[in-house]
Length: 447
Image (cartoon, rainbow, N blue to C red; front, side):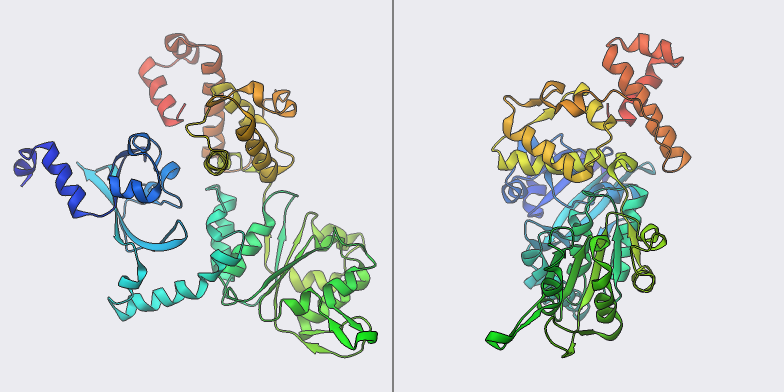
């Protein structure tokens, strides 16, 4: 059989592949595309020649081709959300001499209506998907928008999938700009309330004298009607209370009543209204500290803290920066009508060694502004904001496992040496390693 395949001319093999699979892609051991058929490129709206050689995640959104190689096992008929719909792909690692050298992915069904006809087992899975599909239309964020593979982000994703189907309240703590609202949307989108309302209120932006009626509603005597608050608007769905650390103590008791008794009393009346909502809260300050300072009710804190998601600042999960940059680059370069934008080595170094006090939101805003304003197709250090250009501090981050920390240190050392010296032999001598070992490490760190 092997000899037979070897004797088939390459053009014939390509023709067989093109006609056997509607959409398919082949990647090498570095998850870079080595072959993708034209029909798939037409669907993805990408140029075939430009797609080949790129990391598969740059071309196919939400791809898991690289994860298939890491696991070493095939993913068969795993629903893949792409370009506003679900489809069913197969992803299979390519093994030669007991070594994974790449992966092959093909789309089985581009329309899940066909898939639903196959079996009752598949139909059951499809029904679950359809029950949550509306969230992709109504929610600004989805589970797939949470980018990153750091331990902290993986843990958050795992927890979301476990708690989303429940009715339990959730507390999300993290600095401003870390993506707390995105996580709240994701919990709602994966719950059985996904087709109902997702209502939010930010306690830090509403004047204290108005927050009562905005949150709990108000009875307007002159008009004999109830002005619904956010609690009533979220009936049957999810209420997201942003920055609950800013909620006055006098109103925290009402939130506790909503959580414990499922009752709300609108301003201007003593009438109790039954409420069925899921409550998610966020805080940019650790609530346990506010409890100690008597600025947050202890009983409310213990009612909501059982499920707490701690979202780390970007500086503590810097390993997620390349994926975040790639995501925002793809999004905003398309919006700006620009293609093939690259970041030079010095700009990369500055981006990776900046503290990002504004977290992911700051990164997003910086890249958006740059991509709209730059001339040419390269982001250099000169176009970065002054705050980033001035940041020269060398940081050794101590979060993560020892292996992760050593990897980061090695990456930083190699990056700085390559920035200042083009002669690889001199770099190898300086590090006390062979030139071939240096090239292996450069490839390992994708430098």
